[in-house]
Length: 320
Image (cartoon, rainbow, N blue to C red; front, side, top):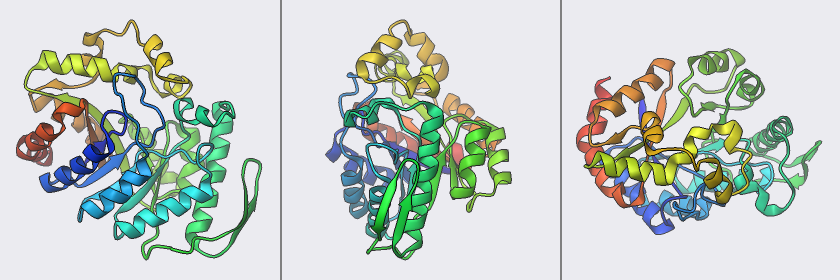
């Protein structure tokens, strides 16, 4: 199982994230994933820099660690032809270390262009069409497309990387698995469900990675860690069917006003001990995931977390 580090654009500034990426590489993390948001979920998080600018900087600041968006929405805020161009460029800058993670998005980030927020079935239609366009551009040559949701007029990627950009698509159930596996290389999921992976493999993807993500809040004082997790990640328990619909931080704040610190601690490992984190990670391993990226909640503990992970967490995870 490959172990990753999450570059949370919602809780850290751009310069800090570039620095954290180099720390994670030096500590021995296998890959780093970056969120691609216009807004944070909660005002307490306080950041939301442009992911693609930071990815270009990180590609130059690192040498070994693989990079990935987790995930980019190519259906409204970005046109799929532009996403393909950005991904190809980062792949060149990183010497083939980049994976394009894609998903159907959240109202939180896409509402800013003023086009409204489509229902989920329409978003999946849009994502399917967008991935088709991106694949065609990665194939090389001129692309024309006249679809239900997107038009592309004589587009071409003039700088294609030597290694084609792998596409990893986020799925949550059988319908999305059947729709996106044939168009993708790898699976992305936020819950350790073995049936997702089983269905994905049967549906015929091009690759074999299954990439998950798990939040934790490491810190020497468990009570302080629980407090930080509650302040910045209480939105997490709502589930993506709810989270995808909320329009901004005020909506997330209102939806989570009755979530208690102990509720967050029940679902997110908090504190100084490695054992609860390893136990939670084992669920992903047992479900068949090949990759797991950790989210360390709280900007002020990132460097200390990476130091601790190098000495304790990564060795403990590799034992299982």
